[in-house]
Image (cartoon, rainbow over all chains, first blue to last red; front, side, top):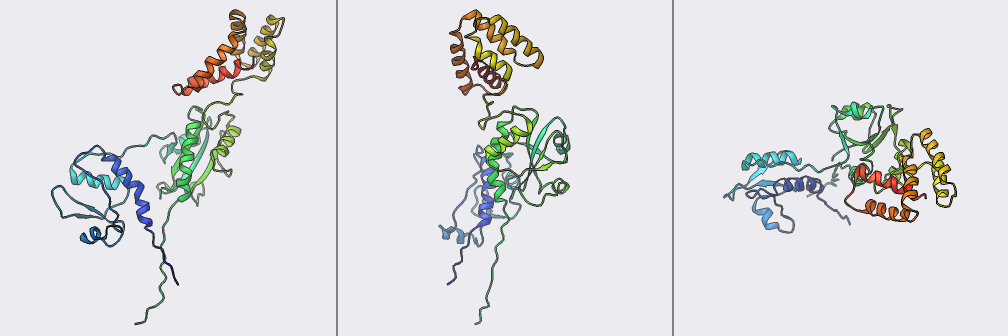
Length: 126
Length: 195
């Protein structure tokens, strides 16, 4: 007997970014960032020809014809797309953090400063 | 129909350890946000591959510590719980933080002055103790509040000590005070508690 357990890893990966998109549009009345469990509600998935997960579709105002979204799945990619479509200017909320964020422009200035003791976490966002 | 054996391999790359470390790392940065010579930093080494490459980083997350005296960096290989990090940073940087971000009860105290303070209330020659304390303050360049408190006790009476401890404790434990002010009040509480 073979048990195959399929888990939607890509759905889990998208979730935090999708949450950020929702936060960005929280106060924008004419834009709704929504989701549907297409496994629990198969008729909704099949109505729109959804075969794989996650699938992102954009429903413009007053239309029942959605457009497939096949762009990048970062929060900023999705926010840019929705802004373009809806004519809005929502922005991703920056979570205040006490961690010093490094990039090539500030790394040496901060890390190699001999007056500071610096702990650096090298991470990947995926 | 012949169905071949099919092996399906799902590959999901996730830095689970990065996500797991994130809340602790944020707390760590909060602990040291008032110590200007300690920096808790992070770099997306996937977006900035040159930086990870420079330090031979192959797995994530990788933690490296760059103390003042060694900018080649050393691997951080202690534990990834908050107490582990705080113990490490305190030892390396000479800081005295608790996990809740407050200064420990030894912060701002001077051992030689602690001895004088504990003898002060019972002493029959307070003037001599004050003089001695002033000498130590001049030598160490620290501990002015010991002398201030000695003079204040003489002026306001011995019962004032308990009142001042209560006052400072209230301030330190209130939620309204943070940062430098909180550190200053903590140091003063640490010192008055020695009397």
